[in-house]
Length: 198
Ligand code: TYD
Image (cartoon, rainbow, N blue to C red):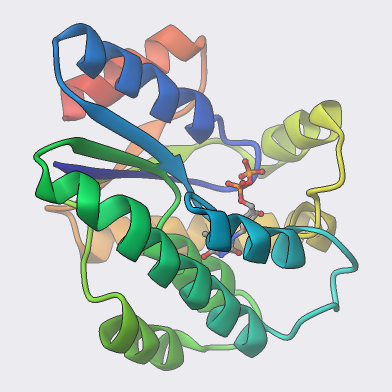
């Protein structure tokens, strides 16, 4: 299976991706836990261009190109080989992040995002879990974490609200693949919700 975790910044999706990977490994499965932007050497190099620096470093259009370049490398070198040998792949973010972060926050770029995705990526996860929390809570967690990878968090609360709405719309449009998981409470409680949904 190919599983992705999505959500706004600070939603706790990275923790959930790790907890699911650990649970499936304990059952004897081979699991490749990976992340975007990144997940391969080339994509990790592109990551630094995207997550560091000022909010206006790139336009949304340029971001779409860079995220797709990173994703293509991730797909070629990490995801496809793992799926081909029968491993379960769990990725912390995938194409839905581009659909939402670049597609609906700064004007409507949905058509551009979908066209490039079809041309260069062409696959969807079997299941996608959107870890849903209130944007104020997500930003507070991000601030507590610190570090320099805060370019998207710097776009503010209104941006995070738009992201949350975008993920909700995506789940409504593709209910068979995309599930919204209540991200409140202890990590183990959220993990139990993910497991029930899986
Ligand atoms: P991530 O490492 O998941 O950050 P966090 O753990 O804080 O959520 O992702 C880095 C940032 O890149 C995050 O703010 C979301 C953004 N992003 C996009 O805007 N588009 C994309 O396609 C992807 C994969 C990430």
